[in-house]
Length: 118
Image (cartoon, rainbow, N blue to C red; front, side):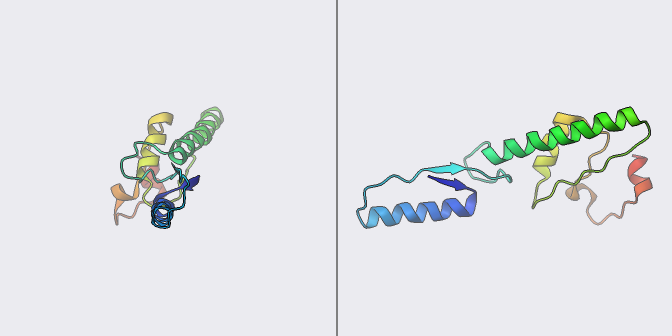
């Protein structure tokens, strides 16, 4: 059983081909798990769903604290490469006031005042 993302599954395919070529009777089972949710033909991976739920829980807790404290802003950065789909899913779950994505801002320089006045 191999658990992982795109690179792991390319090696899984090679391993399966090796076993077939050498007539080794075995099964290779691949489990898609990628926070990027970038595996072809897979609608949703285990890592993606878990990451979205975890980030939503954290952001939801921050929102409750911010609402009870009064005038307070919380900034959360979701790390990773090309993760705007995770940020969008988390935003749908938590309903924040503002969501900034690198694809939206481009080279635009936004200051703290610009963001809080959106």
